Image (cartoon, rainbow, N blue to C red; front, side, top):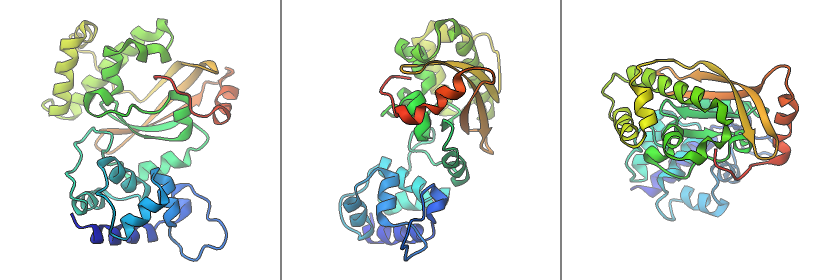
Length: 280
């Protein structure tokens, strides 16, 4: 762990980022082109005093979650992210964990979509980051790691997770999720340890998953029309669109209201209602 070098590295990355690059207003009397310390703290959910101590080379060793938040806030490349973890004396988080690296370009697109719910998820359906409207529509991502962070895993092991969809739509989503997982597994080469372990675990825990997996259906999901149940707004009909990373292991997913429905007005209400505390 090299805290003094870590602080210098953070400052160098902060100095190169403009507020507009991360969706913040420039504001008056800005003496430097980069982000202010308090702006980085705001983006990462840390206190200003904590972040100042990091740049000064003092304080406690930052957690994996904080390092991932810093990497995203400062739009670090994968090599820069790896360097950040090395300076902090932390092992790199495993792929498909909530702390996995997100391409800066995908993050930029996500934060520019401030008028529509959007999130970046892995091909195993682990949410990496989502904007405030996605929080309001879907609820916050689970504060867990490993398989339990995957929406796909929770779909087959926790009945409460299905409450976001009308019961009559559950069979459709079950089929779609499993067919998409088979496509993801094939893209990973068929012997990927994370995908193989997830499939084995779900096959042991869920007869429904095992039956669906045995059908060998495959579907590379590009778009879908969904009905979502929100605790305050009721039923919403949305188009769910996907933009994939080059290797297909991450996707930017966003929701737009279905034409000819009242979901346009309902989605506009999300910013007013704020984050709802319910299980997606």
